[in-house]
Structures are given as structure tokens and as C-alpha cells.
Image (spheres, rainbow, N blue to C red):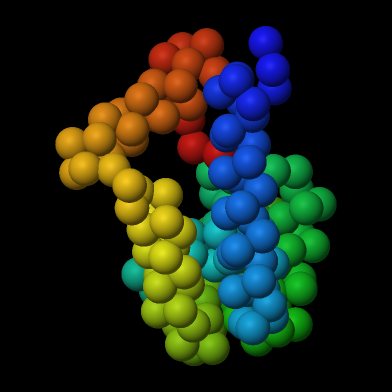
Amino acid sequence: MKPEEGIGFYIKRINDYILADTNERLKKLDLTFSQMHILIYILMHGGRDVRQRDILHYFNIAHPTVVGLLRRMEKKGLVCVESDPDDRRGNCVTALPKANAILEQLKEGQLHIEALLTKELTPEQQAELKKILKIIYGGMYGNGEEKQP
């Protein structure tokens, strides 16, 4: 089988395009792809503090990686990281006004990618694609349930 005949080939090509397009848009905001995802996660909690360990578990990334990402985001004035008042062993992360100011631009970028991915599909095909992708993603973890990255 030729590489371009396999599903993985197309998934990889789509992923590469999404990363390149998103990184180009994020350069203007001085953000990386990983920082964008973490920032959106924090902002979607409606102003409530997010525990650093929740970020670690949600994105399934190592503690040093989360610490580094948050440290760089803190230097950019996007978040504030402070000791968790309920558990001094952990930290709480709060979005700062600068982060809220760029949320709309991040949402626009997500809508742009979604539109590119689905522009040739009917609404029914879009729903079916999402359903199939969820099944595939869940099946990758052996239990058939969707697992967050």
C-alpha cells in the first residue's frame, strides 16, 4: 500500500497543516501551540483559579513541562501562578486581563481551522466525522471511552 492510501497519511498531513497555520497565527500573539491550549483551558474556567495539577492531568503532560509553560506565560503577563491556599504543595493559576483580551482572537483561529476542515462536508457528514473521530480517539486507549489529551 502506498503511504498516501493509508488513513494515517491523511491524519498526519492534516495535523501538519493545522500546526503550521495555527503557529503562524500565534506568532502575532507571541504564543506557542501548547501555550494557546493551556490558556484556553484556563480561560474556559470562567475566572476561577485552575490548579496546576489539573492542567497536568487534562493535557497528560509532565510536571516540568507544565511548570516551564506556565513560567513563560507568566513572564508574558498572561497568567499568575501562586501557591494553592488549600494545598501548599500545589499551585493555582489565574488568567490575567491580557489573556482575556486575546481570547476572541484564539476563538477566531479555532473557528478558522474548523471551517477549513469541514468546508467540503455537509452538516450530516460533519456530525458523522466528529462521531467517528471520537470513536477512534477513545479506542486508542483500549477502553473505547474518550480520554482528554
